[in-house]
Length: 273
Image (tube, rainbow, N blue to C red; front, side):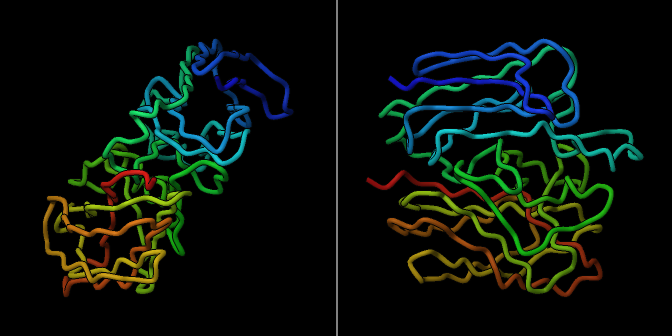
């Protein structure tokens, strides 16, 4: 059985509370989070699959850990205060207040064999290491509400796309860059069966893409035709043993708006044997 541990540390690294367990562990944290606080997850069994819930207001994340210690900084965005809210890309109430619920458990063999959205990871963040899946992009829209345009938003599981900010309408914004590209890393080989792209559809504020290209770790690629739609763009794409995919060569429609955006990537399939 895996020996698991959850601890909440402050900016100086001092533990505020902790919990330990075998195979499953949970922590009920008392007290308001402060800037610099972080949650530290540790396990003596890795690489392996786990379910982690970093906050009671967020969904469980099915993740593949390739290292025994994962740090999750509590998100604070002081630059967003002028807009009346912190943590703009998270559900209101997440990480707030004086009571918090955190949990971690080892996934079962049956769960690891299941067909699922292999892209989904609500706890992904910029600069994360050892916790997969993970996204990174060559550009993101900047400014005081930058969190609602961050790359992590495309794998958080939130599909709402009828507006352009704040939660639940967060998306990946490309800052009007014609060479924008986003890479989804699985951290291990997976077998892909279907790819969904949900584009933001706050028309007429938004534009849209006529097509994109998906490039895969095996060196192959496919052109993905799209249209002006709020519905998912669904592509039956089968690849075996790939470790990453990249969405690039985004061709914007001839539209007055310069603001296309990607709300969600869903990669349906299974872990490769």
